Length: 115
Length: 111
Image (cartoon, rainbow over all chains, first blue to last red; front, side):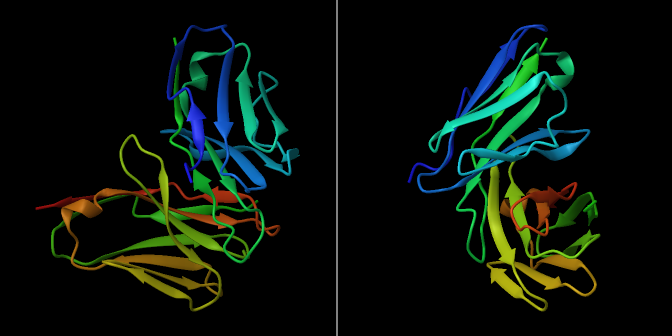
């Protein structure tokens, strides 16, 4: 299996621009998670989908952030408009959503820099 | 609110030495995970601990769980340079799906 795939790997944009991050979960996994990692705040869960449905978005920082999962193999995280404080590494993770271990497998991340 | 605390935050140790990283969490949980992250890389799953008294070992790393004390430990035996990385523990919520991460322990093993 290819694992969780994210694109782009690096994104540099200017304040005010729209940014879209993409994720393809592991085939057969029913749960998908978006995380943000910064030095100041560590790893934070932004939103969690199960069977393509958003279950908990309480970690989404503001209305500028939105996430979609139109099908089982694709999710997007959009920031519009972007701000310098959004600079971070954004990870997507997926899991089966069931079972004793229910491990989350992480993608390589997207390093976002907003100038 | 579930809180997860790790200590130490930073650990510098000599090769061949032993040390333990601690992970405390604030409420009951179904599972505890340990992840490793190399600089600029993603998170790699190391261990999943399910029950009180669970112990798992892989090479020089051994993880244990005490659910009554809400404490997990990651013990490093005879450290080698290749173990240098940041180690995170994470705990699930009651539904068992959402992870709350500790702040991480940055381990540096010196020759």
